[in-house]
Length: 333
Image 1 (cartoon, rainbow, N blue to C red):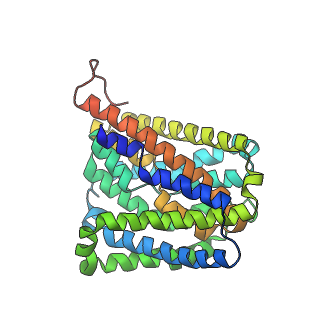
Image 2: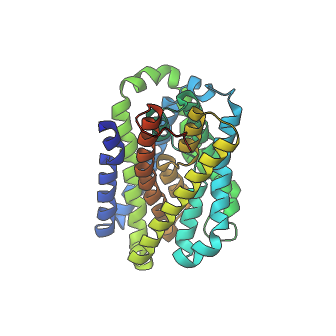
Image 3: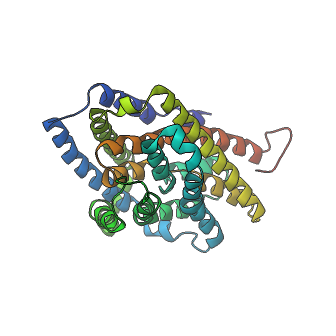
C-alpha cells in the first residue's frame, strides 16, 4: 500500500505544480530569460548524458528474442498513438484550438517511459525483463523517431515544427550526442552512476523542472494564459483522460487477441500506453519555439500525471488478481 501511495502522490508532481504556478506568476524575461535559456541547454545535455550512462548494454539487448512483444509495444507507441491523434483532429481542433492540438500530436509521438513503465509492470506481476528491454529501446528510438514523426504529422500546421533535416540536426547536437557520450563512458563512470542513482534521479528531475519553468515563462510572456482559458484547460484534461483510456483498452485487447500470456499482456499495457516526460520536455524545447512551446508542453504535463494515477490503480488491481486476493478470480483483460 505504501508503494502504491508513493506512485499516486509523488513529491515531484507537487513541485512541478509549484513550478507551473511560479512561471505563471513570476515568469523569467529579458536578461533573466537569457540566463535560464543557457542553463536549460546545459541541463538538457546533462539529462541525456546521464540517461546514456545509466542504460546498460545488457538492458538494451535483454529479451530481444521476444520480438513479438517488443514490436507490439513499439507499434502502440509510435504508430497507434499518432494515428489516434490524427484521427481525432476533426474533434480536437475545434475544441482545443490549433496550438493545443499540436501539443496533443506531440504527446502522441513521444517514446514511452523507462522507470515508471518498469515499476508498474513489476508491481502488477508482469514480465519485467521484457519491460526493461522495451522501455529502454523505446527511449533510444524516440530520439530519432520523434522529430521525424513531429515533422511528418505537423507538416500541414504552418510554422509548428522545423523541417525533418533541421529536427535531426538539432536533436543529434543537443540530445543524441550527449546520450551516446554518456553510454560510451559507462565503463568508466558506470559504478559511480549506480552508487548515486538516487542523487542522479534528483538531477534528472531538477533538469525537467528547469526546462518547464523556462518554457512556460516564455509562453506566459507571449500570452499563454490569455489564449488558453480555464474551460479549454478542462477540456484538455478530459481529452487526455479519454486518450489514455482508449490506448489502455486497445493495448489490453491487442495483447489478448494476439495470444500473449498474462505477464506479457501486463507488460504491453504499461509499456504501450505511457509517454515520457523526461524525454518529451527537452525535445519540446528543441523542436518548438516562442509561443508554441507552452501549449506543446501542457498536454504532456497533464497526461503524465493522469497516467501515473491511473496506472498505479491498475497495477494494484492486477497485483491483487495475480495473488488471488479477489473473491472472483478473473483473467487480466
